Amino acid sequence: MKNLKKSQLILIAALAIVVVAFVVYRITVRPPSEDLSPEARVAAILDKGGCLDCHSANPDLPFYADMPVAGKLVQEDIKEAMMKVVAGPEKRSHLKNRKDLKETAIHEAGHAIAMYRLPTQDKVLHVTIIPRGRSLGATWHLPKDDTSNLTRNEMYEEIVSLLGGRVAEALFVGDISVGASNDIDRATKLAKDMVARYGMCEKLGTVSYLGGDELFIGRDYQSTKGYSEKVAATMDDEVKILIDKAYAHCKQILEENADKLHEVVAFLLENESMTGAQFADCMEGIEIRTDADVTLFDSFKEE
Image (cartoon, rainbow, N blue to C red; front, side):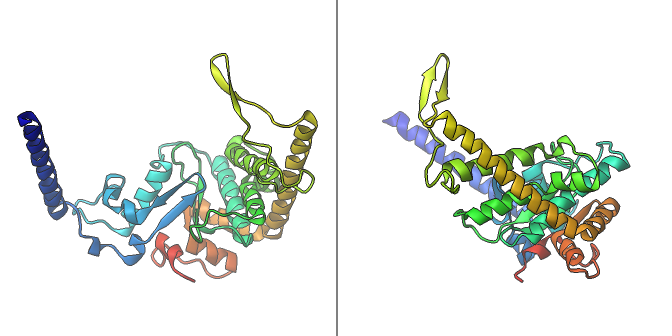
């Protein structure tokens, strides 16, 4: 019993030391939250594979951004921290020739324009051709709300936007690259889920064919198919029909907005990155604001 009380006292003392150290750190190192603008405190990025809530992540953001000597956290630090957390640090030492940069710009512009012209898709937040992590560029988008109840049309239009990079390459580069591999994987998975999991295919009806039982075979578990080879062939056909339809839809969008795509590409080649507000200016045919007039957080403001 004495040993138990002693261990409890040690634990309480350790916790007290941690609390005191944290308070001292907040006072001497970290800037108060009042130094942050309201826009910087309310920011969220959704990349269908994960979500970053910048408001709740604020206490840790200085560790992901290059803090100024004065120790004051500003909007640009928040922006850089968000990018680092989700996609990794910039790779400015990564050597790319003009041809590669242009192809990346065309790819990302294709995603952004397709997303902008699809009514159910998220708002474009940021477009860049600066390499981060394993990606050569990125198109970031902002969720309209926190819903996870996707409709058939929302899922279909997401497939269309995912194909934007590949379609843009085919139309405006004249060749295709491996850069769209992840987009194609995600589009195919979405199409398969629509057809075989969520009963969104008229030919197969309101039946779920995925999520079969697992059996232990040898050293590993393997999923069993609860449907015939004929049904499997129908699934493959319906998935391809859906992907082909989305591809044709995306191609029509990009062909109709070819002039806008070239403007976005030219801006990216000159500036490397484009905020959502600047992208919207380009798409609406008005003068694009400069970096001095716009920040990343303008995209979070209510319309």
